[in-house]
Length: 310
Image (cartoon, rainbow, N blue to C red; front, side, top):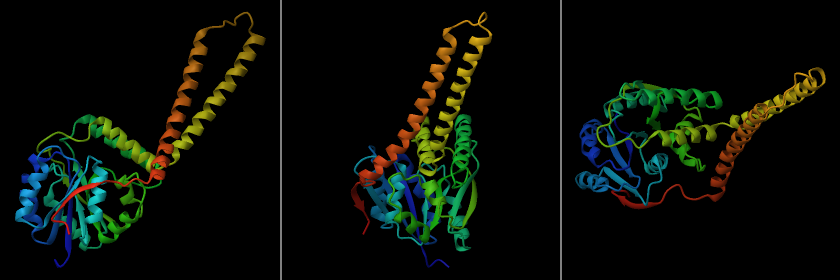
């Protein structure tokens, strides 16, 4: 039953206080299987690397990849997928908001035939109201705009079959919105439900500004509908302008005594047209920036150090 390899990928960025509690909960679970734990250090400036090495000296199955600098959470996961050797690969964060205790349930679903097993948040009471509302809005918006339906209330805590991992590793695009890339090919999927816990230590690495940029990255990476929206806005503004011309001509001819020129209509018209133009330019600019990154073909990340990695 257990003659397969389980790889666990854990991106870390300034998580020194979470390493010991995480391994204390994770190791008793994965030791039932043939396993490897791959930490991907995303440019930490604290003692995270030394904490991981301390446990790696005692256990050769605890491995470490360190980046030259911070390349981002999605790139750390990408790196982990490229180095993982497991028949199934599980990714989770180090803050223990994703409980490792549900890993056996995920493996059970995988053995039953699911090639992707998502850990879905049944409750997220620990999250602030604003974060919950913005997350719901994001998933509704991206699923409305995109042709690929991304599961709601799931993050990067998931299990992937070897086939799915190898497919991800063949994708060469620079923008790595993995929640979309995992859902895009349509591998058979199942769910395991859990209650989200509080972050054990440290601060969140996803403030509102990063959440907004992450959402924008996902929308632009998986939909061209915003470009169509820009065309619609241009058409609507043109229609409104044309109607305004007709209104001005009719008013001038049939209501000359009541016709009063003023700055309000001019001001509103200028603001409306300016807003439409800026929105359109911004949307086009986002897609041009994607083309720019793809043309550059820079590496996704640079590895500074490998520990316990062949």
